[in-house]
Amino acid sequence: QKEVEQDPGPLSVPEGAIVSLNCTYSNSAFQYFMWYRQYSRKGPELLMYTYSSGNKEDGRFTAQVDKSSKYISLFIRDSQPSDSATYLCLTGGTSYGKLTFGQGTILTVHP
Amino acid sequence: EPEVTQTPSHQVTQMGQEVILRCVPISNHLYFYWYRQILGQKVEFLVSFYNNEISEKSEIFDDQFSVERPDGSNFTLKIRSTKLEDSAMYFCARSSGGRDTQYFGPGTRLTVL
Image (tube, rainbow over all chains, first blue to last red):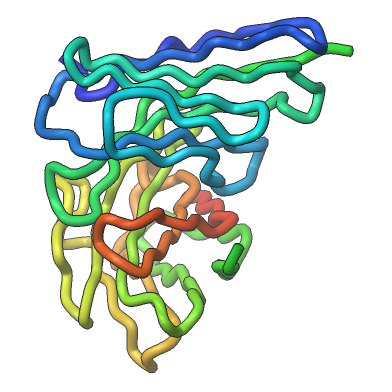
């Protein structure tokens, strides 16, 4: 079983749609959870970082973690074409500094 | 957001050659990491580095790989004898703490022919 599983998509939505991206993880020892965004041929950039179960909101983005079911979600409201990228869910905490990546979901928001 | 610079942006090498990939993080970050991403695959952890020592390495990080921070600034990844399967994007990352947010550089695309 993969440590972090993420549907690679691709996912295509119209501008203004609400986007839901999801990951599951297998290791209950993971302590913190992140979403990164990666544009083509660029390095990943941080969107959201959270330690605990529950919701964390930042602008149009909401990260949700449910540790009991080992489920991580990212919601994007009022999606824009500039949101078109690969979205990566990551976990950490089993060892010092090592991050475990999901496969990444390719999102396209069309005008 | 503080920047991480990586050089070169693209490196082409022949199989069996040595390559050195460089990362220039801001000076007050103490934790450094290398990750790689083979085309079409997920990003994979290679190694973490703290206080001039390797903290952890993955099974990918075998004897062909080494890391160092020779001048207290640049953080390098050396691959001694490159193989075709080493072709990938290599990302450097740094953080101020071992459990803090990691900031990634733009990557070096390594092509082994």
